Image (cartoon, rainbow, N blue to C red; front, side, top):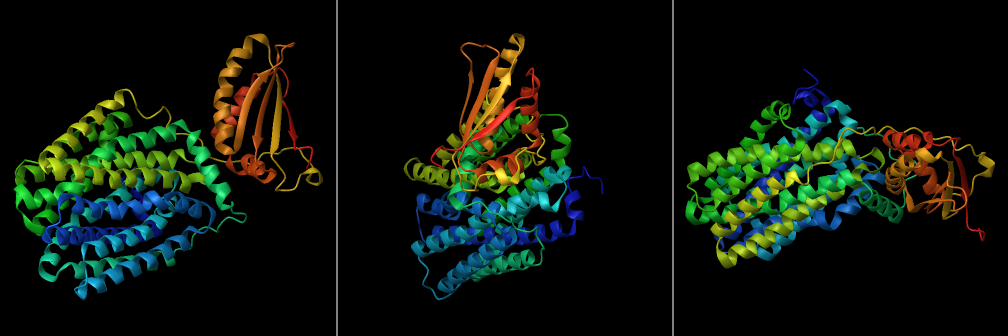
Length: 522
């Protein structure tokens, strides 16, 4: 199989096994969603209550995303995914029993949907972060697209099957299938022999601070997150209000609802085949703009168009959906370095699912007041505006194409001279001597070096120059502890960071001199 093929990762046995497990779990999740939403529709719940199913499903990622990312970076990802899926299976099993006994009400349905979402949220960053351990770097974009296929193929199969099963056997049956799907995922993950967990994991507080510091100092990551939010907030209206539209002017019933969701999923599968060909003609930012406009058309149509026309438009919307998330997900995977990958992906998932969860509440509340038709039309227009916004807010240059290799730096310090790991804060002072004609270029480069230092551990940073000798510059920054400084130099500074640092140092007349300081009281 051609390594450039969108299906290339499937030839790798462990990726295939875990992909199939993820597909099964996503089918179970979509069956659960259809069962829950249709239970509320049949019990005459208003649009706001129906939309809360999506909120209950996704809000846990907003609440637990950062913690899940820290756990995935600091501990064994296989064990984390295994335990989280067992928890989700237990919650889904309990919901099944309650529904089968006839004790289910809207409050308990939303509660157990939330608990199932907690299990998914705890495992999601680890799921995302294991991709580079399963496929080579050149296949990461294809792997990201296939991961989206697992979600969207499930959307094609799960809702359609669930619509039939709910009408024949009731919601409790699909809730039980969801519990079984989580058990299947846990079994597949248990069979995987993952890389060893870190020997010296970061402490929870340090890891959280390091992750947030990285995001703040990473302009490319922040732009990816912004593009994600600009798409997801209006796009959430379609998933939140489609069941209301089906029960309204479309009058299709649960089977018809499942088939319309299946049209979205079918479009996503078609999109996997088309995406590599289209990407040869358009850059990623243009693709994101086109995809937002196409998904907006499907959202607009859901509020008033007849079912046959809507189904066709939803196929194109499914293509747009997978194009958007293939680009954004792979950009995150390829731009984040290994040491902070799960934490960065957890923030990405928080933005993705948080925007869906909060958007569902907003659109559902507006639909209760103004009706679902005008609200879906408004959301479609907002998506069109989001597509146009790529002209002023595109992905930044070289997103996904940075050198993320790490090589340990030789600090030139004898082991007997090294401070205790917890000693700190450490102040690092680097002296540079510049020729007058190179000072401006040096200062410009050092702005990029500043971001690198802040991403990898620095808390404060400044560049100063001598009042009496204009050739003398000093870079000064603080790191919390000596342990954190060693992590910065030996585990976090990537090839891209080294290139920037070396370019700045190369402008100096002599080799820059580095010195380290601790508080005198230490």
